[in-house]
Image (tube, rainbow, N blue to C red; front, side):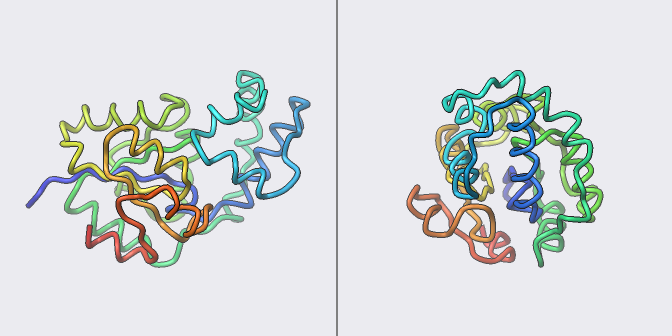
Length: 205
């Protein structure tokens, strides 16, 4: 059996949480007095590259933002989210063949609660969230080293152009899913190695 390493984003890939997390980011920005988002498109634009790098470039005080995020994320309503249809059996099947890791801009505690709420317990070896490192490139490189993986056999599964750019910058295979936050056309424009429309297509990689 060939050894592959699959790295998954969480929000927009495993969990349909766009409205919830757009709301939390807006609330964080309001709390720190920097309400820069005028539309959903403004929010989605934050994920054209690394989220944290982008908000700093827009003049956001990152330390203040992170401090505000803690209590706001603690109130996240998981009932307002749902897993994407058909994904759980696919991820469970993949986890029986290959190590799976979560690499996300979200905090590990929030992600752990999401995974538990939606039945993904036991599918992922570890979670590398914003409390570990902010750069997904650094997190990808850490996971490759930790699991002694070959970068040619390592796949990052994301739903934003930022995910694809960071996967490519880290030298691993970029897999874009068309059911997440960024549109299929937007994802295609940054040339992922794979662009999948349905969860079961992940099993063919």
